Length: 376
Image (cartoon, rainbow, N blue to C red; front, top):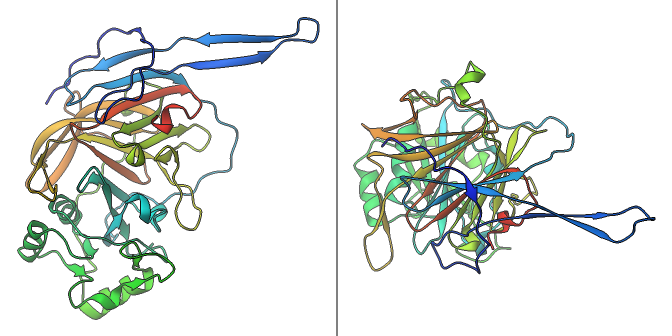
């Protein structure tokens, strides 16, 4: 659907007390405390005002906060490239329950979909290239229909441990290879006895390649790659996008903060910088916020996400913010700018965060401490 223009900027109201689930937090401020020269003495407090614009046509308000960033010089950051023709996509269902953290292997993922499963707990569909797999991936958990649909879009062989009845029926009716630990394919997974069940199931580069060899999985796969920009002007006007925070349950609050020196977004989860099990900090070069309608299906709280049709999105690409629309027809999702042209991405990983009407969102810009990223 087309997006309306943001309302005029107006002063930010005082920050309210801790909001209820799904309620937008109302503001942020930056206090600079300076020490005066010895002859003057004392403290100087300077309040830098913030402002915001509420973006319309959203299931919940999305607030643009003007908060600054600063980056110290750092060495070049090496990240995985975008999936391109010739890559063999491999999808793994990865758990994000608070007791399962930190996850393993996400730093090598080319595409990551983050979406709720049940009870506000999110999971990941991590898509890798067979040619560039990490040594450890997981914890591996069960699949839901929308994760299976995204794997199908990329033609990615799907490694998982069971699934909802609807997801398993969907996979049985699909030609997509799915390697289910609960079926006869348990040998392509392993359990770490130093971690508690069910948060201890993993797969690896060696086991995935064995599965491809032993099961004759296809190694020539056709998919539609993301369009990569060739002209910087296609990014849209500079919006100084520093971070994207999806705030629902604090433990599952996701944030992205732009690092100018590294030209990448630092990933936050639950109010802290997100790292993998081997201590690697997570970064991405592209972020998509997809607003999707969700309906609860049963007593277990399983969801139906309306992936077909279209809806609003916000893209963070190379430090820029672009408003647009996602559109899914025939099993493939396209991402469009406000003028209807295809969104252009930069070479590197893509994280897609699905936002339902239970979520509240902030777009941060222009440098801040980590207050907003703590989601409290």
